[in-house]
Image (cartoon, rainbow, N blue to C red):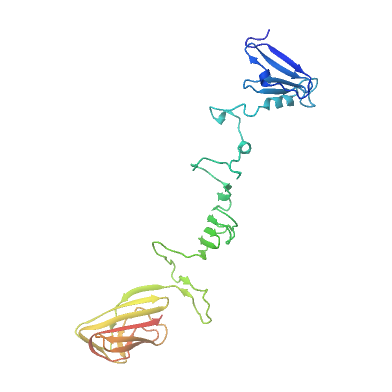
Length: 346
């Protein structure tokens, strides 16, 4: 007598090789269950609760003897599950044994043909830590490795290929850098050796200024070739005001006053100014018109122009070497003011 809860079992036999019973021909009821034995193949068949026919190989391998299943055979039997028979509809994957990423990848279908795991629309990764070399949809991201940079590359890392974006260490690993490569373009900003490189790119500063932080540095026009060139660095630009002093050659009636402006581009200075008396002012040829030029001249003799206040009389002024004193080449009779301008090197 079987234990309580068990029902009788009926066995049907077949000697035809390859003969497998249909699920409809095997019953599973509270009154009893049916088994089928194919002694030609050595297989036992029964129907499970999911209405699937399960095959039990009685002689699975050479390790089995006398019709008994070996431990290998039982392992094979226990791992045999009909496709689609079991599905987890509640709970989480915690109910299963630990699964490696390689095992998980082996059972995830490739929906797009790209070999990538497909998420829903606009997935969000929160508080994620990514290290080593990681591939994202055919692109590359390097974070926290020996060279310490992020790279997004669509082609070669060379300056002429693909799109390369580096933060932190450069590709050579010897300098800090922010580098962007794109087809036929290149923008490179580095810290260690203070390099800004732009190839076939125009730079636009939408707001703010381009600031030269070190005196004596500026824009280098070395690509412009000329045999007599001594310098191709534009290192200075400045505008300002200056106050001409009263020259010894002036005849001033009333109180003296003066004003001036200047523009300096590189080593070239252009000054303009005016001297006047509250009643009148005049100057004799070959005498000092004014002093206190904003910069000292570098070379001998520079010629400028002058005029009376009408202005209906033109004249000239000149400046000597290593000087800040301006001379009048022309006599200008009493007038309301004398106006002048001159350009010289420093």
